[in-house]
Image (tube, rainbow, N blue to C red; front, side, top):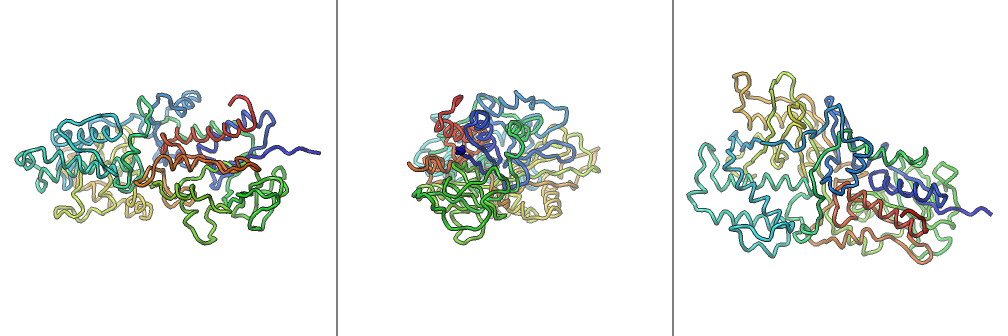
Length: 533
């Protein structure tokens, strides 16, 4: 009699899935403990990591930064495989560009003496919210907040009340701006940058208490010279051919909530194999059945689910049989409630190539200050979706490739717009901001871009967004609930969960994703008493 090895199927070939697969293969499969299969719905590995090229430069369509090199497993891997150096230019190779030029709507270049106090105020308020500061000079009554947005709003109001009226109204050379509106515009610029950090459409949706529970790694933040995808390729390189199967979109996952032998669920028709005879089994021998949109199935003893929180949200909200990722029977209520409460948003990047007939020795790193949407002085030619971006900067010093970030509703709108509309409306906007700029003695009245590339994470059915955050009404306990495996005495650890939304202190980061994949691999290795955990 042939004794069948336990089969582990990982759904998703992104950072979490490949980290888990890497660990399980080296510590279990090589030792003959179990079988391993990684199924990926897309036509590439990497998930929300996707290194690309544009205009001869290496760019990142998704994950971009190593957020703190001190203790980061991503940084360690990048060092080990030699990915931190490259002869080819790459996005943010100079880090964060220094000395930005801050320009207010209608072309007013702002003196640092106007910008710096508000910038410092915002930094101090965020440091307070994150527990890095115990107090802020001159700012009182900062407690009792439900959201980060309400806290910041209160902080700015307190600051402005502290100043004298004469000081607020004294703005020389800024035309239609008064001091109070200018301060609000500069503050909003920083809020919009913060939105891209956490993927919230509105900072009033971001839970205040959870902000102080988030953990940052120490050290500088850097990009990866040879691209983030080099980390993914390194993790996948240990896996034999055939372990990773691309183009396998999951339709549903049947699991045994009561673990009754021989009961397989809804009787969904399809092959009992995924076209590979090594993965053929009788329905009664393994507790989990994965159905794919192509009609095939894979049977497993354990499944590690690494799909995004956005995909999980869509699955629990969808009431019909439309092919959206589902569990049969549905997930337990505690998981459904956690998935519903947690925040998940979209962030997109917009790359723009300056027209070659527009010569500039160096395009400035711009910070953009807009009038509020209801302000009578706002420029009607600037579309609404641009008004909440905060910057436009070269991707590295002296590059003619520029980058801007968008979050929330504006990020969704960016995805929907044709490239020609984006080129026209961004050109119009930047021309209105930089009409003062001189080139070879002549004032430039129109900035032109001839190429555009944008990410599209919101509409991609494999992701449905970018990353998670702790929304008002949720907490890190919901992430713990999301990470809890589905198990029973009869069939332990049937379905396990990994991904950035399952890590309570490092969510929204690639190192958090890495840790989550390692966590679930170790959970299974411990279950099977494998060594080197």
